Amino acid sequence: MSPLGAPEPTVGRIALYLRCLRACQREGLQTISSYGIEQRTGISSGQVRKDLSYFGEFGKPGRGYDVSALLDRLARIMHLHVPHRVIIVGAGHLGTALAGYAGFAESRFEVAALFDNDPAKIGKQARGLEIMDVASLNEHKERLGARFGIIATPAASAQQVADLMVQAGINAILNFTPVRLRVPEGVVARNVDVAHELEVLSYFASE
Amino acid sequence: MSPLGAPEPTVGRIALYLRCLRACQREGLQTISSYGIEQRTGISSGQVRKDLSYFGEFGKPGRGYDVSALLDRLARIMHLHVPHRVIIVGAGHLGTALAGYAGFAESRFEVAALFDNDPAKIGKQARGLEIMDVASLNEHKERLGARFGIIATPAASAQQVADLMVQAGINAILNFTPVRLRVPEGVVARNVDVAHELEVLSYFASE
Image 1 (cartoon, chains in turn green, red):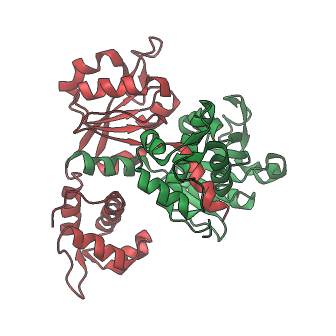
Image 2 (cartoon, chains in turn yellow, green; image 1 turned 90 degrees about the vertical axis):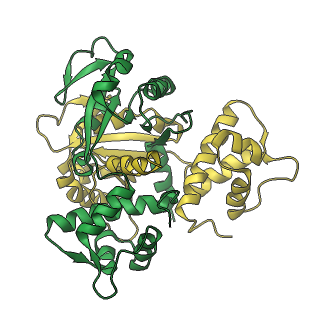
Image 3 (spheres, each protein chain N blue to C red; image 1 turned 30 degrees about the vertical axis):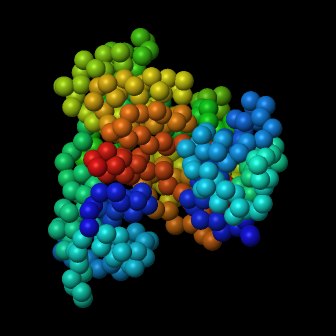
């Protein structure tokens, strides 16, 4: 079956398996069963087998999955077998926090540059990066070679920043504002909306 | 049908409808059709009708939904008809950014307090809040009356902070570290994992 066009919940779980397999590899495990994955991720072994079979046959009955082979295969499916460079626009508290986010390294994401439009910030350093003028994003695109962009600006600037990112060759945008971005075909945008996360929590905490 | 036990994707969409209805109310709209909701949220009218029918009968054929009535009903289902107080632990860049997050107000979330364990930060102000010692969380619980907690600490502190929150009566935790928290029955924890969001983007941007 084609690895393309997997539904989002499946992709989300594959990302979790990948993280689990990286931990297994660090611990020196050679094989892991679907039950082992269940214990580490909380995702049922039946779901694990179903998800992995979506992308091909990996496991051997009674022997489990080969950790390295499965890790390599899933990383390729997710396009996470190569490192990715990420730019962040918005050098306020959120952008600065994200520039220093420890969780990126394991997934081979590297923050390549931090941009802002505030003359008081441009040229200053944050987390070892020089804050650059967002108006110059396009000039730096060859040097940066980034396909991922994070928007950590006020909501009112989000669409304009997204447009600049698309011009500069970014085709994967993570948006921390509540704005629903308009992006051309071939560009993917995803929102992280903290109020929305609390709203969903509110429902489940009130059951 | 019982409003309890709705699957998470449904709950996520209900939160989006709620936001859409609040915008309609601000614009003075009295009624909205499922097609109107589709235009504003991008969720198909068929899905809208199916989701809303999960919680009861709201619409009138040919007339659409009454904005105020539906807003009130959905807010109650999500337990968002009353304001909620939120505490944040971790007064670094991320916690400070979240304490000033403009998106909370619309959902009637109010940040009641900001905690840290760093003596250099305790007693200082951030976003109009005094940073308090996380060790004193339990002492302040009556006064704060918060049921929601956000963890914006380094990963190594996350479980300990979650335990303190549970002791202090918090039963809904939003966790910005990649740690999978252990929480007792009756407490709900939800992770916002930025690396995971980029990983999922990576898949869809590579299709």
